[in-house]
Image (tube, rainbow, N blue to C red; front, side, top):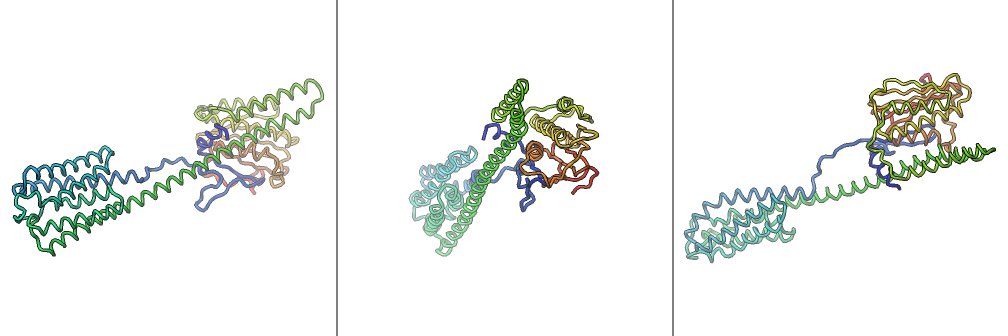
Length: 451
């Protein structure tokens, strides 16, 4: 697949293949989406998905906010109990715990070192519980209220849930409340009755367990979202590559039909030096077109005035010598260059088909008009013999590849109306109307009797 095809796969977001009676080109899946590539027919900007990284930030900042609130509420009680504790050690321990909470808050704002700072909060809190009796001036003195560490127990277990793997976080959620329960029954912890200490311990375990479950359920859910998103993007990339390959195949098939086969037919009919020179010129032109199809061209950002396209079509019709060209409401309109190239080539092929196959006819017309989609509509018609679409050999590439597929890959649609004895009308519309049925194109007599 060439680089140009890869670009086309990303660019043709409005492409929709259409089909005639010569063979199917489109399908619709169970949800109403076109199975022929209309995956690219809608350009939507998705809302930012909930990812694992985003939920980690939300959870850590929530815990940090709660930690700040609880620390501020705990500060008066800590200062009140300072008189019964060894001042230097108590201040150092409280300072380290407060500093670790501050570091955790800053880490959540900077999005760096969140887990390590949360682990520091949990570790320092557990150390403070274990050495609580040792920092008392008199370990046998019964304090009048709960140790101030009680109010930070949920903060510590929540930080453990943020920082540690599930097993160790669950272990910490059990160990820290038990350590507090042991301290609570000691004189330095208020010498509470055992049932009360057990009740406080169970309450802390339950609260920490709920936080732990919420955090890990959200983590698992967002991890699955990330996996599903990665799989979807991978499948989308494959679809884009397949679409780009199909776009390139259609274009090369069109070039082969329009140029290479015509060159071979001309070469086969060479009878003199002038014919040989013409065949050689056609061969050089065909080679150049094939090289351009596989090379680096930058059509995506360019636009072409519809009047310029009409002038080119008028020149082509003049060279054919049998078409009347009419221009309607095209002033000030412009279309992408890739669409203009597709419409021009498809229109020329329609004119060639009319000259070659329509037989004697009273009139041949080419009409270029603007449309409601801020694009253009080109109609190539004749009053010739017409034909039965169902009887067209599928190996014939003029309608299917050079006209229909070429316009479809540029984001337009081709409509064919014909029947034996009633002439032929080929209408090229760009862009494809929103209400246009992409499953096929109407075929029938020029008087409107579609079938």
